[in-house]
Image (cartoon, rainbow, N blue to C red; front, side):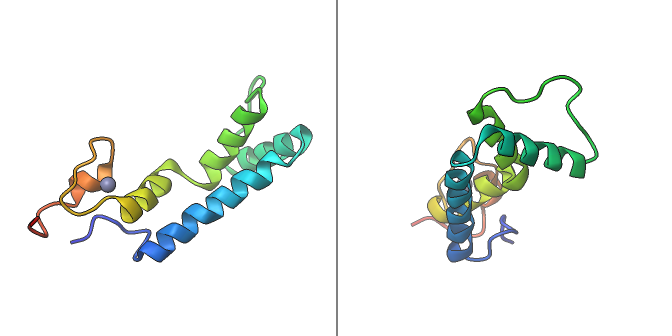
Length: 106
Ligand SMILES: [Zn+2]
């Protein structure tokens, strides 16, 4: 039994994180109106919208966009696949606690 589903290989996990990092850089190059439009479009696709306001600063806006495009669960899973070795237990990592019992640590 493997605890991870989204990333069968370290390469796929690394590719996902690199894609995320490239998206972060691209978003920071965009103007605020463009970022607001992306965020509004995402909310509309989820069938929702801001009642009042929305994320204020550029960082907040970018974080909101990234949280939709790259869900924390998948980013955590990618980190786990890349950097957590079997037998290690990272308290904040759900995948470590699920990934036990299959191998003895030497
Ligand atoms: Zn882990």
